Amino acid sequence: MSKVSTYGIPKFCKPINMAPNPHMSTFKRPDGSIPWEISAHGYWKRGTCPQDAKANVTVRLYEWHENAQKRGFWKEMGSNRQETFPRENKKNKDVLVRLGCKTNKKVSWINQVETDVVGYADPPTVSRTQATVGCSV
Image (cartoon, rainbow, N blue to C red; front, side):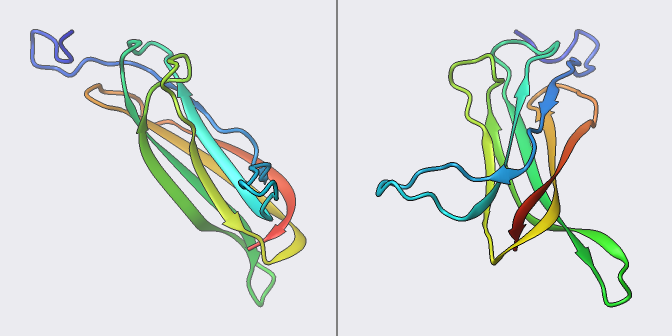
């Protein structure tokens, strides 16, 4: 299938970003222990894109901070970008970001997911979810 129209214009498709809430990791190590980590993951659904399409999915994890004047701001604490298939494809793998917690202070976190379909024009949409989690990095 050609990814360019007969007029040389890139084909367009619209993926659906998926950004589940940030949460404490439930990943089990081989010894059965669960690390004390904040976790965020992202994936994409096909939307109007072809089944065999791949996309670069970027996940960014932001923590809420306050400066000395008690002015709040979001600080990016970690990110990961991987090429992956849509969720409907059995080859799909979620893109993960995990960070070790330093304290159990309840802090607000944002999981931000952006999908860029390889070889297709797609809208520059970003999905975000926010949650308060007992983990400060």
